[in-house]
Image (cartoon, rainbow, N blue to C red):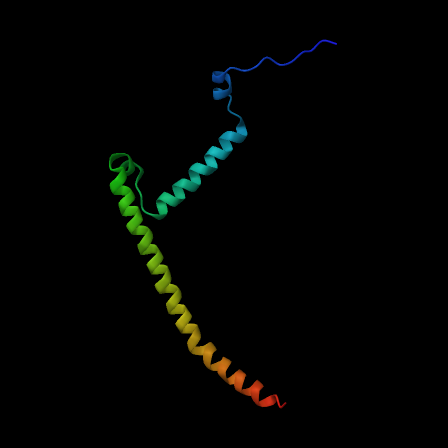
Length: 101
């Protein structure tokens, strides 16, 4: 029996051996990163010129988005509570009156 093993690849060969799966994964990650950066209004050119200033503005934008989301959800919570809580109280009164131990 002859032992025929594939020759070992060098570091450079392994480094430049790019599969289609790797390229698709890289494309997907670039799109996701682009969407996240666009969410915080980050301009790629500005990121290259003023990295830390851009990060500081993105951090501020993050807190603005979070606070706006909390205000938005609190407003709709209160709007729904105006209807739901009185109906829930009436329902509890009706069911409590119907239960006679």
